[in-house]
Structure formats: structure tokens, C-alpha cells
Amino acid sequence: MLKPISKIASGVQASTTLAIDAMYKQMKARGEDVVGFGAGEPDFATPERIKAAGIAAIMSNLTKYTPAAGLPKLREAACYRLKQDCNVDYAPEQIVVASGAKHNVYIALMTLCDPGDEVVILAPYWVSYSEMVRQAGAVPVIVAASEAQDFKVSAEQLDAAITEKTKVVMLNSPSNPTGMVYTRAELEAIAAVCVKHNVYVIADEIYCNLVYDDLEFVSFASLSEDIKQRTILINGVSKSYAMTGWRIGYAAANHEIAKAMSNYLSHSTSAPSTISQYAAIEALTGTQEDIDEMRLQFEERRNHLVEHMNRIPGVSCLKPQGAFYVMMNMSSFLGKTMYGKKIENDTDFAQLFLEKGKVATVPCTSFAAPGYIRWSYATSLTEIDKGLDRLETFIKNA
Image (cartoon, rainbow, N blue to C red):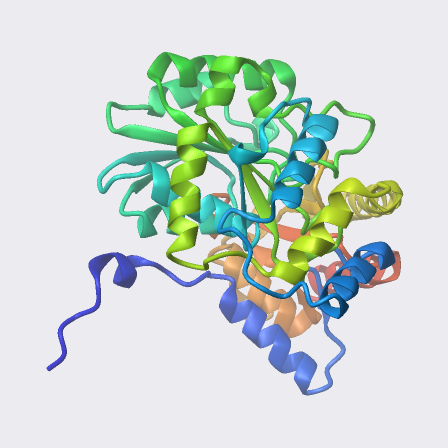
């Protein structure tokens, strides 16, 4: 009999949304008219100038290994972009380029955590955070904010959750799945708690360029030099430049952490895709007009979806301030019977909505937000109306 696999690996759970996603894809493959709102990626094409840079790299035979932490020019470009967008200064040697922002979060956790350390995750949160914490041998501690709090955890809640074992706090603003953005005052209060307890902060700011209504985006690392030294800032090109499949993200951290993260990469991926790195240089240093156009379209879609959804009896949502997600409150249906099935949780609702309503959404229990369904508005206004019309019909006919 073979020996068991590692306890860490056996404890990592697959995403709870995979069953619904698999069902959605099967229905699509059968030719059924199904509408999808689960995608966590822009529906826009990668801008032509960026694609051309990738093609030019191939044609110029720029296809060899790069330094583990990324091309020097890309690290310089990341510094430039962080200064322009986040008002924070870093040197190129403080930048670590990896295969997506998600990969950077993972490497940061592996760098910071010892087995048994606690990592406080501000919730609702992206489902992968807790599983990555477990992969690092650490313990996720979930601190959740309610809808009444605009889904934003207070400094007082954070302070109460920190113990002697706490090593890291994980913060995501703008947020996936809520779309909410922490204000400067809220971040300053959280920063004070982190300094008080001497903990690191992984600040996932991948949606920093997708903020609406002229709201101020505040980068956590920009609050003070003391906070900057404790912060591993996560960003990348996936969301802002419609480059999800190019797999380029970057982290900015103090010199010691950046060096350690680079060492991890040198023994795992060796380096990200060289071709993608050259495309990312163009993304970060070229015109940003394509970002502005995407943001305007996302804002229009958000306004349309929120207005329409809040007219449908039985459901409601807050107006998100950033990213491209809406959290729909479906808690009024919990315990009720729809189409002969009792709705015990948001997953039941989402599965039934896909089966009967032909619309794929994401249940949010795994995001520490039971009773909610996440909709992505990274799709056309026509598809948004189709999905919401089907929601209304689904509820009426139940």
C-alpha cells in the first residue's frame, strides 16, 4: 500500500464553484442557451499594441530564460506604473514578477509563513486566499464584514482577531467578490492596527485601475514608510489590460522579502513567460487610453445591472465601487421551496438557477458570504439584460 500524500496537500479543497462551472460548460457543450456571469476576467480583447509587442518578441527571438524575478525593464516598468497609479516608490530590485498576481500571493505566503502561523483574511474574500494559506502550512482566520458594513471589515474587528500567532493580514481593495473599495480613513485605521501588532500585510490591488464614480483609490503601501516596509503589494496586468491568459503579475516589497520571493521562483518556475513579459512592458509603459475606455464601459454595465437587479422582487444588491462584480442578496429565499427543491443555501439557489433559469452565477458561501450570489459584469449589456430577465422569470415561476 502506498504511503499517504502530504497532510497539507490532502487538506487543500477544490473550489466549491467547480461543480456549477462544470455543469455550465456541459450545458453549453450540449448547445443549450446558457448565460454565464461567473467569469473573473474582462471580456475585452487584449489591446492591439500589447499583442504586437508579444508578437515582436517572438519574431525577434526573445524567447529565452529571463532572471527569476523578471526582466529588468519589466521591473522598471512596474515601478513606473506603481508611482503613477498608486503614488508609491519602489526600486526595480524590490519588484518580483511571477506567473500572475495569484502566483505572487502564493509566493508571498510561502515566504512569510511558518507552519502554525495565523493569517487574518478580511472577508468576504476571494476563495483562493484561504487555500493558499493552508498550502503554506499556516492557519486562515476569517474576519467577515456584513452588508450593513458595506462588506468592509473595521479596524476594531481586525484588532480583536489578531493574536500572538498572527503573521499576516490579507487585504483586497477593490474587492473580489464585493467590488467595495476601502477609504483612506479606513485603511489608515487598519494600518495602525497592523503596526501596533507588528504584522505583515499582503495588499492585493489587482483591480486598482477599475474604480468608479471618481472615487479615490488609495494604495495601502502609500500610507507611510512604516506600512510600506510591512506590505507586500500585489498587482499585475490581467484585469486592467485584459491580459488574464498572459499570466504576468508582480509584487513589490522590502528588499529582504523581494529577495526571498525571487529565490522561491528560481526553484519553481525559474521565470515567467518571456514573451508575456515583453507584452507587459508595453502594457505598463504605453498609452493608458485602453484602460480608461474599459473602465467607462464597466461603469456603465455596473449602473445598468444594479438598477435592474434592485427592481426584481426578492433580491437586492449594493452598488459596487470597483472591480467588476456584484453581490446579490438572495437570503429571502433560504428555507423556501423552489421548483420542488428546498433552498438550504446559496449553492442550492445557484445550481437551481442554472438548471431551470439557464444562468450561471457564483455562490458566495466559499467567499465567507453565505446568502449571496456573485455576478460578474464582464459581459455585454445585452447579456446582462438577458440574465436578469431570466432571474425575474425564474423567481416568478418558482
